Image (cartoon, rainbow, N blue to C red; front, side, top):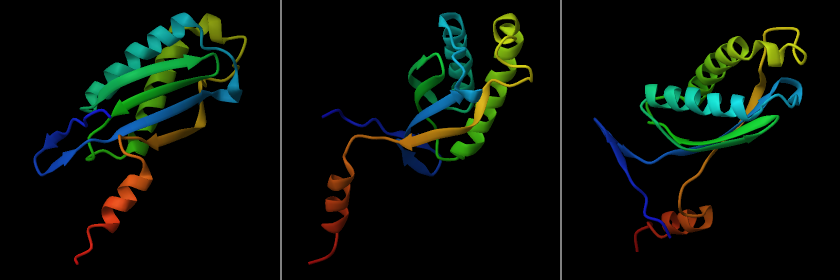
Length: 136
């Protein structure tokens, strides 16, 4: 079992890891190696700007998986909105020739996304721990 590294802010200690999946508009197979490499850089920059840490990123032609940590002072929905808006704008600009056959309008990401928190212990262990906190 791996040890959880806690981070600190003024009035809290935290360790919040997110697994985010973002899908291309209409699930078009537009993410090639060059776009994935550029997305990795852009996503890393955005996460660091939000005081977070990129742990892992990878993808397929129609979606990307991102594992990252973000401080609890930020709403994950606000972060995802900023991430999708910024990366979409830059990718559309930098890879316009590649994307033109796939999209007539200025789009890249689908509006939907999946985000799941993930950290060390399974829920059953946490439930048992909480249940055992009752006084005798």
